[in-house]
Length: 195
Length: 78
Image 1 (tube, rainbow over the protein chains, first blue to last red):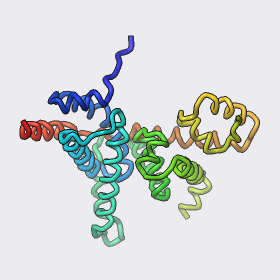
Image 2: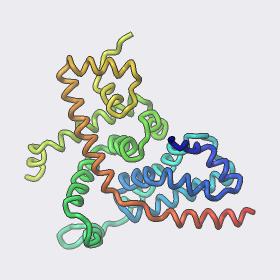
Image 3: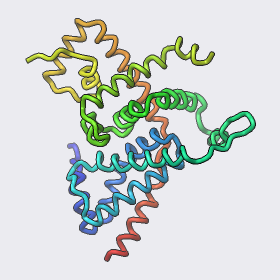
Image 4: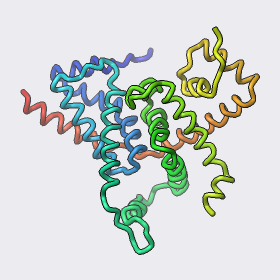
């Protein structure tokens, strides 16, 4: 027999009534998608952890003050907070001066390469970097739809709500994203880019 | 009323957001329209690649800190 999940709205009510463990269940239920969504948007593990924490701290404050009114739409609501914090973080990162070495390479990027644990699989890393590069080459609006649909698990309708657009615009952006990604995945295109 | 199936409809189908009527129409359209079928293949290929990436994203490690923060702020409010 399949065990029925307690709806998010009920967990929130329990938490607001003082049952702390309800929050833990809520975090465990949504942490992976929210964190992955943040990580794919900002592309920095440590910054993602910070934004993830900040997201849940905001959520906790909202819940404690009784300012949550989205019933069982907790996931999209939480992702909207995470998305807004990610955008703020990206903007402030862009304003920070970039430290580069004599060849113009970012020192931070070099540190990231050295930071990998020895057991990390090289093939996985290569694949990871390849997909990451493809996504990062997309125009921001297309990238956002891809990340929110694939990694945050939101429906197109929910993405449209979060990004203050409509369903057609949202699907249109995904459509162009697919065309662009497919073009970038083409070996001929990759060869041209390398030259 | 039948829809003229577009590439956007195909996306709804691939991502599990098409209703049952639309699904049937898409199935027919995919058999009869090569261009749509090629787009369907491309979109599936991209989706598969993205799903592989999902497995490679590091796991979040800071949820304990959030629970501690929550507990502290709860103590303050009672």
